[in-house]
Image 1 (cartoon, rainbow, N blue to C red):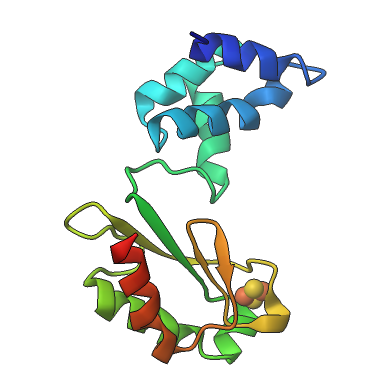
Image 2 (tube, helix red, strand yellow):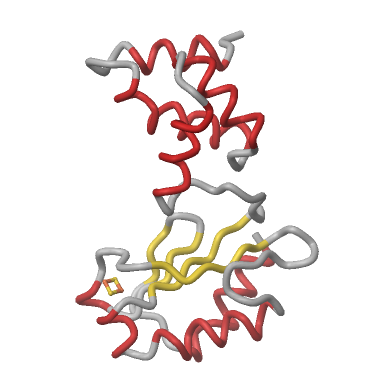
Length: 154
Ligand code: FES
């Protein structure tokens, strides 16, 4: 069985310096644990012979790393300019109502985390919603109940 340390060493070999491998190592840790707990950050730091503070500084800078536990599913609503102009706030509010959770939170059953995100790169088809890494575009508030029903049934 491949250990986390082995995985990181394999990833590290692709980069010119061990520091360059930190994002890949964080991704691997998050894949294993679902989020980056202080223990997971320490594991990354040990594998790269870096400090936990350095690894945490990278993890806390980028939006795709989760420093808190997240739900089994992730709903991300882009609220940046193009999506905002196309009604993203109504879409976000509709998800919050349907899921019973505020943006940034996770449903009580731990199933779904709802987030507002910056530009998802789909501005031409705003507003954009990303559900478990799958883009839905454009999404209207009226579409939300069906998306949530599918998510809950998945
Ligand atoms: S502003 Fe929403 S995808 Fe670009």
